[in-house]
Amino acid sequence: MNTLFKWAAPAFVAASLAAPAHAALPIQKWQQASGAQVFLVESPSLPIVDVELDFDAGDRRDPADKAGLASVTAEMTSKGLLARDGQPALDENQLSEAWADLGAGFGASAGADRMSFTLRSLTYPDLLPKAVALAARQLGEPSFPENIWERERQRLSASIREANTRPGTVAGRAFSQAVYSGHPYGYETTEESLSHISVADMKEVYKLVQPCRAKVSIVGAVNKAQADQIATALLARLPAGSCTPLPAVPEVPALKAAAERDIPFQAAQAQVLIGQPGYKRSDPDYFPLLVGNYILGGGGFVSRLSQEVREKRGLSYSVYSYFNPGMHAGAFTLGLQTRPDQAAQAVQVSRDVLRRFVAEGPTEAEMKAAKDFMIGGFALRIDSNSKLLDNLANIAWNDLPLDYLDTWTKEVEKVTAAQVKAAFERKLQPDRMVTVVVGAPVASTRQ
Image (cartoon, rainbow, N blue to C red; front, side, top):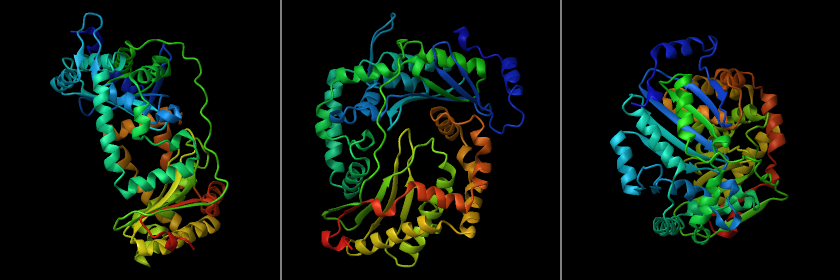
């Protein structure tokens, strides 16, 4: 047995006792010699460990003509491994069977900002070392087989063609292109962009996956020493690299004027999206906007939009709004579905509700109801290891304070109605938004 993973119970107890007594969810953080930053929440109730490794290699670094490169690169890491150090090459079926034999899982994906890898395994000494070793191989030595990429390109192209028959896809694409004005956040993977992506492109973008750029989040029945060993082993087969600063990605430009897109589409329901660039995750208005959006359109049937659009006028079964902050300003989106002949009215009512909310802000009664609900539901955000991992990786990626989860409810509680009003006035310009209507008659959507 690899002595690296002979867990020592006394060490575990000592580490647990060393956690800050005041912290409900103590997060430990340290930096390895490689430069990798490791974040740990010990959760000893179940013999499971969940790991997420994040790298600055997401979609925002895709070339304009190769949209989707980061995502397909991440996906292709599961399609086979190279032979190395006396270990044989594995094709995708052999790799899948190897994971099944371990009862563990390893996945990869790319979002707007980051390329992420996740491992889940039991912590039993006869399983975890093998799972970590296999994950390290998959992370360090993907083979990116040409023939499999050609097959995947055809499969993804067929999926895109099918998605293009859905009005929601058409609306989302038009909305992103209009809101982001050429910023990578608005790039859409298409058959054409896939045709431009080669295995060589994947290998090039994969050079960003280096230990010194890693943020490793770990939740489970392991202590700090064990977590450090896991992180070291997972990153051991990646090239060290020089980790020079990466090229800056431009910020999302502000909209200069309102824009309307009416796209005819034969469908029973019209798709409506209204919005503009929102704010970055690091924005100090984060909590006022979080609470305010719950009142505006994030609170389901009790939100203002739902009351005005759904309850009072019956224009839609559901209507919502949300912000999507990232390393750059993510979109503010207001969305609904309605009968095509009601689209114009639904758009106007939604705009009126938004304009009034930005101008007047919430009432004290709305503030109390929103904060009571959000604080009361906080426990549901962290009631499983997988949710804890999501929160921990979010803290790690966004450089949030380590006591973020401990202070979250206090931050929500102290938000005032005046702060919500001021934050919405700073971030949203109701008269300068994009409106996309897919399915409704063009003439009927304009006021």
